[in-house]
Amino acid sequence: MSPEVTLNRISPALAPFISSVVRNGKVGLDSTSCLRVTDLKSGCASLTPGPSCDRFKLHIPYAGETLKWDIIFNANYPELPPDFIFGEDAEFLPDPSALRNLAEWNPSDPESLLLVVKELVQQYHQYQCSRLSESSRLMFEYQTLQEEPQYAENMEIYAGKKNNWTGEFSARFLLKLPVDFSNIPIYLLKDANEDPVKCFFRKQ
Picture 1 (tube, rainbow, N blue to C red):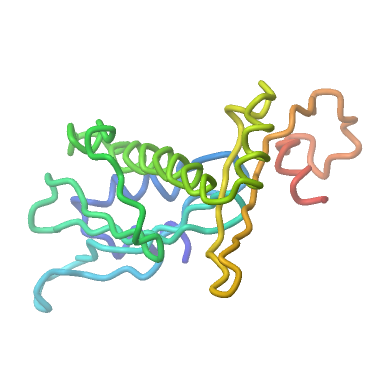
Picture 2: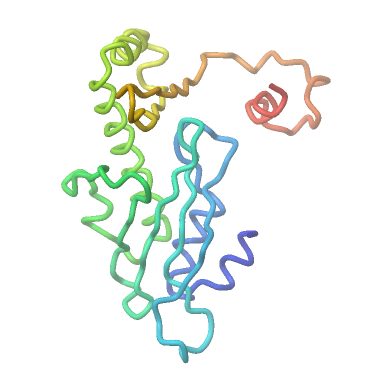
């Protein structure tokens, strides 16, 4: 669904928040993918005139996976912050005290929703890191990477589900490699104005 179609279905009072997310929303290491909104629904009465969608599913690229979180506003009270449902990650319980932009929700700032999502993704990263403690092997790999300055702050982790038989689970580490794209010859880029990082991701 294109951003224009999405915004045409959103309650006008909430549209600035969603516009910021779908047009400018880039979270985490994958700078080639914007956040996406699907499954638009309305909690308003069926006779409510005009666009009235105030809840939707937000797709967030993270460590090679796509997180799907439900975001629920109330179109009748657009000044209130949204509620979040974290899909399959039922054990992910964010610390409210660390969500400053949610606690100090500013309904006048179009960036408010995007700022809260970024805070939640940071906590989600911490949650995934904590899960590695269940596997000594994965924890060793993680600690080894943490010792490298170029990776410590440029890493996303996704720990998969445990195998019911073995009790083991795998994990995916997404790293931002310290590669200098400034010397890539122009003729290797499809478009001279194209982002080298985006080009690199597509050609691999």
